[in-house]
Image (cartoon, rainbow, N blue to C red; front, side):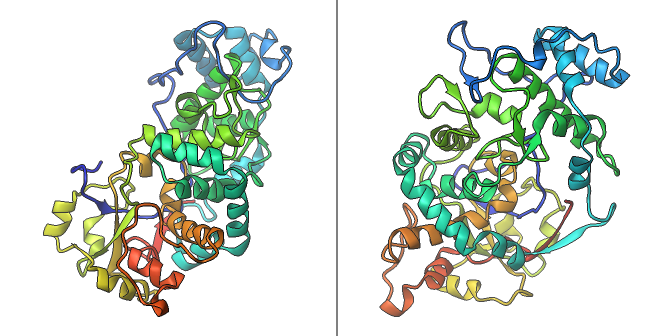
Length: 411
């Protein structure tokens, strides 16, 4: 957590895809159940579907493995769900070997070193920029509404959706219940108990939403169980999804207003601070690796980082920081205190440094290269020769990755 409201810390970008985790359904402990709406006022999440669904079949679960039966029984008891319907959904789930293969590390037990420049090139690319500008222009009204209501810059909302699904072009074609069941009960080697617990919790929330009529049993998503344009995990849908078009139900896969407003609401609920920037450039001490333990959770306050030798980069040096060679590791960036946003949003950590750069390209294209400044940015006047995108991004500190250009991560 960040210690001081307006102070900033180093943000370390990870390439690990992480779902929005919360405590697993007991045993050992139950996750917080989504709040139920009053009768007649329920907001369903997902497209309209027939009343007859697999969840209405009466199955006692006798054919299920013991651990799956125990999971279903605990879920039904703790969330006051009909046991036959819970068992029917679990019985309807199938193991998916592709899901297991995709979630497993390429080489079990070994770290994968990813190049920042290569990773950045995958996302800050012409087609993504073009589609982003089109998406922004076509949905300008609701994007501006979300930015105003939740205090999250339109650029961040647009960039998140672009990074997650190419603006809806790649939302996944896996049955979510199959993906979550596979990872909850047949996680590939090496088994990671914390990940198994997280996916069991996500499966519990998916089943709960389905039996509440808020998701269809055959909902499609990513191999990790993420759903819709913003790739929300079931827990995030339960607690943070918004009805952006006021039609009485939430559909993150087909309704752009719902997706846009949900991204804004999610970030606000996790502590996004209106008007704070995402990053500011810093000069790190000679050995910044001594300040971290390899995890994703910040452990030091900005005051502690200063005591260790870190300092905010003077404005005049920001262009120089942007031009450092790939092997130069001293420049970095500290992230603004936006609550738990960098730690809870699925994939947010690894995308956190991409979004400002993608945003600059969006702004450049939309403004015809006239106005490149992000909302609220205060820039010193520049000569005509210094108004290019590279120069501007350098002064804003957006060209360098946080701390390390190559970060060891698990897939």
